[in-house]
Image 1 (cartoon, rainbow, N blue to C red):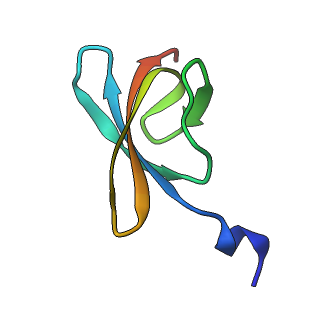
Image 2 (cartoon, one colour; image 1 turned 30 degrees about the vertical axis):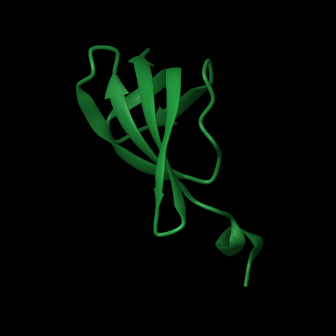
Length: 71
């Protein structure tokens, strides 16, 4: 078993600054405001504007992540 299989996974529900859904992704890191990240299937790069933690589901932490798409 590799160390990658033991990492917790967090679900990010992405929305743009107008509140429109952009998608859902799973990451091993917690989202933080001002953080930038890449998501090649939807956009090249985005900056996190705000993070709201939602109630966990099946022991998985979930977040509503408001983003500003850079490219």
